[in-house]
Every structure is written in structure tokens, then in C-alpha cells.
Image 1 (cartoon, rainbow, N blue to C red):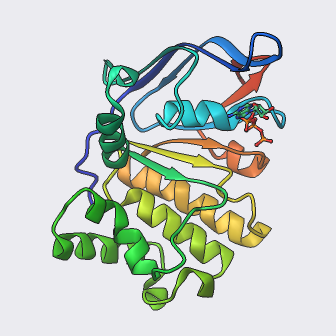
Image 2: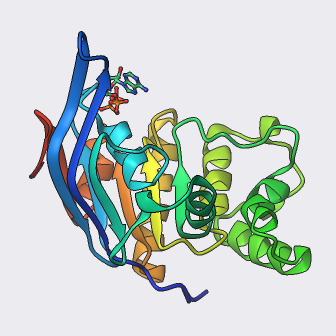
Length: 230
Ligand SMILES: Nc1ncnc2c1ncn2[C@@H]1O[C@H](COP(=O)(O)OP(=O)(O)OP(=O)(O)O)[C@@H](O)[C@H]1O
């Protein structure tokens, strides 16, 4: 399987994030910069509440920062209309969350196909791509199982396959192994590293798991509102 989609370099510039009112507010970060180069795998670590998920959501265009910019290939994505941004996100960014948000009323195959169908691609082509990914992730025997009939590790692999369907420029994962037992978690970690090495998939992963962090090219520690390289 080739990754025919060019990865895009991503720059976060001067990010500031403040929640709350002028009376009571929490500042998560101020003037934070980050570069994600093509083909890199990066971990973001830090204490609970430091703002890791918020930072990942901003990089993934799911949340708008209070200040600063996120550039994809030089383009300031937060200048776009919400609809345009949603299309860009679906097309270019693959997201995996700790609680994967799969659709329980659909089976594994249908869940993996969903981003392709949302993007308006022909059903036959989408199905073909989904089947290749499902096989790669070792889930072929679970194709027609509904989400509730799959183990936690299988559900997480379905979420990874779904995130990869449109060959994203950037793969983001928030605690992907957070609710898995250590053996299943380890398998998922190896799978993610393999996808990076094999497909050149650029990835940023928020994790509390030291083993997963140690498998990344760079570990960035979010502390006192700044990223420090370990
Ligand atoms: N929409 C919001 N409104 C107000 N406060 C928020 C909002 N989103 C997050 N926060 C606060 O910002 C802080 C950072 O949250 P975030 O989830 O980014 O941290 P985290 O580093 O990912 O934490 P954890 O490791 O526990 O998941 C928390 O104190 C949280 O309550």
C-alpha cells in the first residue's frame, strides 16, 4: 500500500489558549510554537490538565485558539469558513481518540468507510480501500461485527483504519491506548510505528504511556504553557 498523499508540514505559531471570563480564567498556553515535519512521529506528554488534548484539538482544527495561527503547508486554516475547515479536516486529518467515537449501529466495515462516504467518494472505491486497511490491521474476521461486539483493542484498530481511510496528511491520536490492557496497547503501539515507517505517515500522539512516548522521534513536554523537548 502506497501513501500517495503528500504529507504537509504543519506550523503552530504563537498559540494562546485561555478559557473562561476576565473574572476567572485558565490560561493553558501563551505564544506556543510547534513544527510538525513530514514523516515525523511526535509524542506530547505532560501532567493531567496541562492542556495536551486542547493543543491536539487546535492542531487538528477541532478547536480555535484564543490567539495564534495553525498553518498547513503555509495556509492559515482558521481564516477559512467552518464548512471549508470541516471538509479540510475530513480530507487531511485522521483523528483517533481514547474513546474512539465509532458509530455503534454500524459494523466495523461501515465505520471504516464513513469518511469516504462523507467525502462523496464512490461507494465501491471506498469499500475497496476500507477492505485493504481492515486486512492490514488484522480485522478481516470482524468485518460485519457491530462495534459493541468487538474488544477494546479491535475497536481501537477500527478507529485507526477509519482515520487512515482518506490517507490523511496528518494522523493525530489522543491517548489511543489509554483504555487498553498492556498487551493490546503494545500491539497498537507497534502498529502505529509500523504505519509511520511503512507509509511515512506523520503523527502526533498525546500519551501518558512512557513506552509509546519512547517509540516516537521526538517527545515534547507541555509544562507551564510551553513545549519543551525531552
Ligand atoms: N471548553 C473548555 N472550557 C473550559 N475549560 C476547559 C475546556 N476544555 C478544557 N478545559 C480545561 O483546560 C484544562 C486542560 O484540559 P486538557 O483536556 O487539554 O488537558 P490534558 O493535558 O489533555 O489533560 P489529561 O491528561 O487529564 O487528559 C483543564 O483544566 C480543563 O478543565
